[in-house]
Image (tube, rainbow, N blue to C red):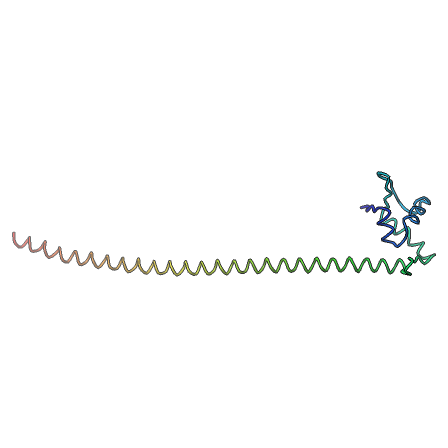
Length: 154
């Protein structure tokens, strides 16, 4: 996969001026293309093309930083960004997990309350069935005696 950077971005990345990059492009030392009057450098081939130059000349910026130091600095900055993104992701996942845990506990409480209500209703049904059975027996006993009296009277 090719990554094309504008000449300004590429120059900033490796610590050179855009004019020095243009010179390297004119010498065909860097893979480049021109679109809409802008020069784009292929990043991976461009950096690989500069490695031999770095060995023959110590490339230093006006501040005295070598390409290696800038590369390490860039890698460390990218690493910090990845760590920040990782921490943010972990924090988000922990928040989601807490929300899900709270939701599950809430559903469990509702389930327990419903279970208690069901048990209470089942007990009431059992008591009402027992009472109904008692009333049936009492009715039978009472009306059974009345029927016997009528039969005896006849």
